[in-house]
Image 1 (cartoon, rainbow, N blue to C red):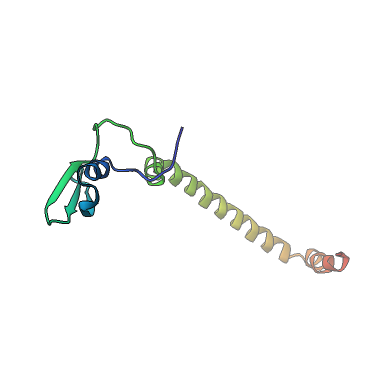
Image 2: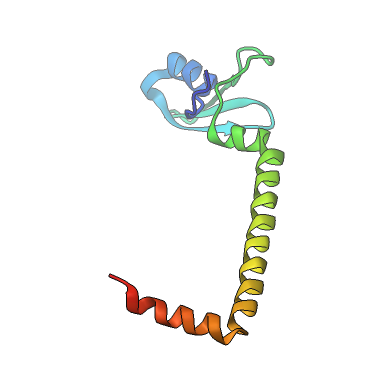
Length: 115
C-alpha cells in the first residue's frame, strides 16, 4: 500500500536515544548518509541514517513524482497536443462560420429565443 508521508530519519531517533534533551540542533548530511547533532556542551555526534542500504523507505510525494516523471511528461505532452488540436479546430470552424452571412445571422438571433 502506498502511503505518502514525510520520511522519518533513523539517525534522528538514534541521536535522541543517545542524548535526549542535550541536542541543540540536528542536520542531515545526505552525501554521507548520516544525521549530525550539535550538543549543548559544544560537542558533535552523528548517527547513520539508514538501518540497511537496501531498505525500501515509504514513498513520499517527491519520490513518486521522480519515479513517474516520464509518465507525467507523456501525459503533459498529450494534453498540450490535444489542446492545440482543439484550439486549431475551433479557430478553423470560427473562420468558416464567420464567413457565412446566414450562420452569422443565426448565431446573433439565437439569443432572442433564450430563457
